[in-house]
Length: 614
Image (tube, rainbow, N blue to C red; front, side):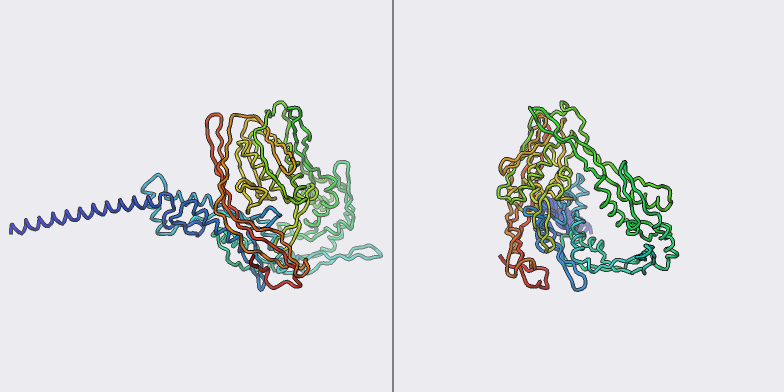
């Protein structure tokens, strides 16, 4: 019996040693596995990580960025198809806006998602990291990207391609007839009309959701019934009220020493049946027609465009060559509301119009106190080979920037400095293709201004606060990676003056060379920039052929040339006088850009476009 107890005890110890050994082996194996696992994913994404639905497990940041750029390039090539009933149209995510610029319908901010996905399971707490890595693997974590949609361009696309499907509701409205003999006006009321409108907001929301996932599936538009706000049955004795309202004419509008008379016929043309927030029906003024009347007949005699001061260097001294002054603008909506109220209450014989002041940049500093003593940086680019209209626009744009003064702490906005870009400010048009149509647009060549100002900013050691590279490579802006695109209303180019003195920007054109000289005071900072690294060269897609009735059948005219895709970056550093070093990497992705040609045909085919091989 005693022998059996000793045997059992001996076996128990042996099993305990075996279990301890197994446990130690498991711990060692787990430790080895964890070390191997962490080493494997030290510079890459952990298992289960996706960005915008794209699996990036095992990829490093650069590889993930390349993969996402490739997906975006595919979207640029294929576009998004919208359809309603038996019609469809393709929305190009990247649209031509001139010979040297393609404007994105959507801007994809995936860099923050790339950083967030990489840093997510890399906190300072090891236990938390373990849990986050497990949850990524178990739940397949997806990090969305932010998408900024150009609403104006998308709305234009729907208006061009699908507006004929919408029949907006019409309120019951005034109908007037006048006797050719008595000039008396008789009023009636038309029947309200129910409408049908395409739900564009819902379509745009679907587009945002798809773009955030880098998808380009077809989107079916939906229609909704639109109800009129004012029905004929709700309008009682409106004819009498309308005649009394019309009898208030003529009406005198005044601003300072000027006056304008709204005749009886003018008032008749802008009268409208309206409903207030309480649901009461009354006679008032049509907002759109009334505003247009004020704009066409009065605004041009009141409006004054604001002007910022401009400066130059004369005999090593800063002098003002264009004084600043505030602008003035007729406040159309406020004036119209006042006119409507006065007519209704019959309280005034003459109605004072309402204006608003457009402030200019105040430049009241004495010239000696501006702190401008020397050139702190120079931006340069060459526009050799540009067509005549492009050269003209570059000259106009350069003159708009010339003499601009940027105060300490102020953010410079290039679009704000350029102001209105159309024929009234001296710009010429260039033909571009949008939504398969050839149209003329103003301002081709202004990206030469953006690129040159960007290069001047970097040479001056100033912080860049907003910059976007061109969507495809353009010969005028080589080397790739050192360009900046602008297009009204976005993208813009911005920098901040973080020096203790003013910065003065002067332009000069020498032959086909454009320069922007940045004047200021050297505060001891030293700027440096590496040569750009260009990689991932990709061939463009096949030629895109667009049928047109504007050319003779068989005639082919190519409006855009093919460009290779590529990625580029350069490193920008600023060492300040106190020894502080600030570094930034400017990265650029250029999509492969296909040649686009118009082909004259006798009749358009059923498809929106034909794509042929190069």
